[in-house]
Length: 402
Image (tube, rainbow, N blue to C red; front, top):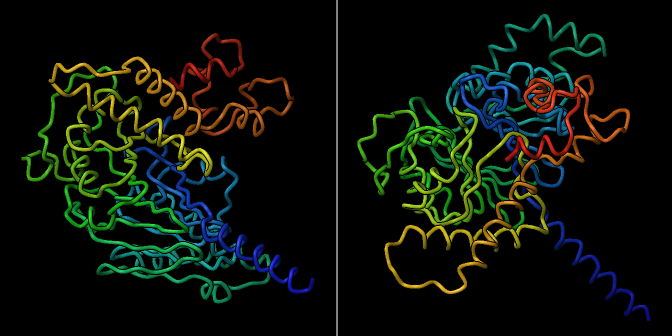
């Protein structure tokens, strides 16, 4: 009988370990915008999470407000990483770093050259302010500086932050820039940073589950556009700082990534059909258009069904681009699945109205007034309130999301 219980305990322990090893790795797009101020899109930032480990990659304008929207505290962030040191990517570094210091975080701060210099400058510039705030709890700057480690990343290496393995490589941009690969359990997520075509990125992103990519060349809704060359390499593009759609789709193809996620938009509304048509010239995998507060994957249990539906959609897209006159069986069901997939993508990757009600509907009347609205919703309240009744309902929000 005793041996029987030992076997049961061993089995349960094995199952718990297996679940822990497969703990989901997620990426939440904190900001999907660009240097151009946009009330609908905060500056570039992504939160990578697994179990109790959280890593913030880049800190553009609006990062703190959007972290607050998802109830993520600065004191709970274990790593602050930078793809590069352009202002739109580290605009909110100073307040976030200082909050981290005051919170006594054990934090790794890393990025390309100048990272340690920037951190030292912040400490020098704000020393009196930091000392004053620390004195309220009887602490000094020397008490908290040992809590963080700042370093400049060189070469191509791998290091660990909590439960997450981090690899990086240099990519082509106007200044020194890094792309990162994050791995935990059975999931891998790559963030490209800003770049033009770089042979190093497909190596780093090989067979990754998600590649969060610079959206250079994305087509604005209602704009006229011209096609790009199929092969993104050395295509003579005038853009020197950012990829075009041929380059991004070429790198996604060479990486063999399952899902390409576009972010860093300098436009608000994307013509997804036209942009997808250009990307399809090279890349036939899943495509997602990033939005602020979108989390990938949306849930651990829905990943398989989402990928299944998207694969149907991808086959349908490919069939549309071919010139063959051969008949395709079961055309109608494929179109139906495509619609279901698009609907499911919208539901699973954008904040739900019920979640907004939970956070904002203080009087529990099932709608959100201007006084209750927060963050981006408050800034854009008048646009969202389509019938001008002073409230935002689920129907109004759904119509705007489409």
